[in-house]
Length: 141
Image (cartoon, rainbow, N blue to C red; front, side):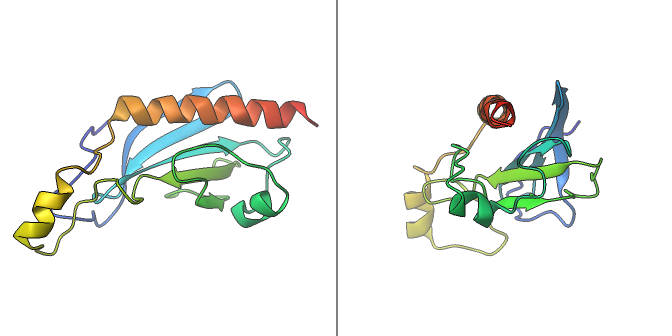
């Protein structure tokens, strides 16, 4: 699979799967939008969070502790439905590096050198941690 996480020209026309895998009942994806990476974990219909929107998760005080918090839930991620409910997050928050297609000022470029570019290894560590948390939520049933 392609390993380029950031595209200095900005967003890709279509997201690129950087890596995907399975961990027991959980399927996961790391994708790049070009400007920044995102990660997703798919839970099966039997999981208590299946069908729960991320806003509803927060209302029910179900917190998945991950960088920037959960920002996405849906039956589908880039055409990878797989009869899962996808829980996702992104790496485009304050302090995170994001590639832009438009020109930016030189002074802003100097500020950006302190922004964090996430590595695939770091993102996969987050994925593993989220899967552990989802297993604990599944055990509460």
